[in-house]
Image (tube, rainbow, N blue to C red; front, top):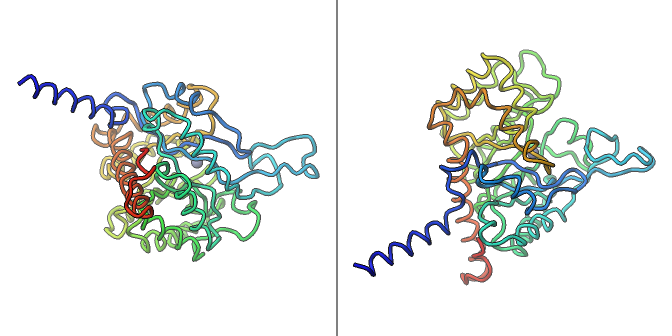
Length: 360
Ligand SMILES: [Zn+2]
C-alpha cells in the first residue's frame, strides 16, 4: 500500500512537472507577443517572466521579422524605431530567429514550458522561405512551435518592405503554408481583410483571396491575426457575418482568429452594440478565438496588461466556457498539439533518435 502511495506521489509530482502553469490559476495565455521591436531591441526573458508574474501562463513568443532601416539621408540623427516614424524601408531580418531561440535556450527547463517560440525571419515572397524555416528547425531542435506572426497585407508596412510586395497570390506563400502543415507548425498570419480606405458596398479587398488561401491548406493550423483588422483597417458593417461565414463552413475548421492589439480592441469595444455582437460570436464559436496582447517589448506589467484591460467589456459578456477557451483553453489545445507534431517531425529528421529534440 505504501508503495502504491509513493508511486501516486511520484506520478503527481511528474504531472505537475510536465504541466505548464496550471490554466485554472492564470488569467490568460498570450497567443500574440513580440519580444523585440522594429529595430530588434527588446526585453530579456528573465525580465519578461517578472512582468508575466503568475497571472499569465504561457506566451507565444515572436520577434518581428522586419527591421526599420535608419537612413541618415532621410532622418539624420533622428533614429526611428517604428515603421510609422520613417519613410525609409523595412527589410527582412532573419537573425531574429536565432535571437528568439537563444533567449529561449537561456531559460531553465521549467521556464521554457511557459513559452512557445515562433519562426518569423523569412521572406514570404521567396520560394526559398521554406528552406529558412527548415534550417531554423534543424539548428534549434526542440524550440519552435510555429511560424509568424508574419505579414502579407499590412497597412503601411507592406509597401515599405524592400523588394517584391507580399501578396496572397504568390506561390511562395502556398509553399510556406503547405510546409507548415507537413511539419505541424502553427501559423500566425497577419493579413488585413481590407485596404485602409474601404470601398463602400464591396466585399473587403482581401477577404476572398484569403478564403482561397485558407481553403487550400486544410492540414495547416492557421491563426488569422486580429481577424484581419488593424489600426486603420476597421471592420466593415458585415465583418462578423464574414467571420461567421468562415466558421460555419467545415472547409475552414483549421482556422482560428486571435483578438489582440489595443488598436483592435478599440473596434471591439467601440459601442455597447459592437461588444454585444462580438460576445455573441465568441459565445457561439468558443473554439475559434485566442486572446493575445500583441504587446511589443513592454516596459512594465502595467503596459503589458493594457490590451487585456481594454477588452474588459468583452470579458464581461462572455459565458464561462467561451471565456475559458478564449483566454487559455484554445491556446493549450492548439499549441500542445503543435509541439507534439513538430517534435515528432524533428525526430524523423534525426532518423528517429530522440537527440536534442526533447527539450520541450
Ligand atoms: Zn503583432
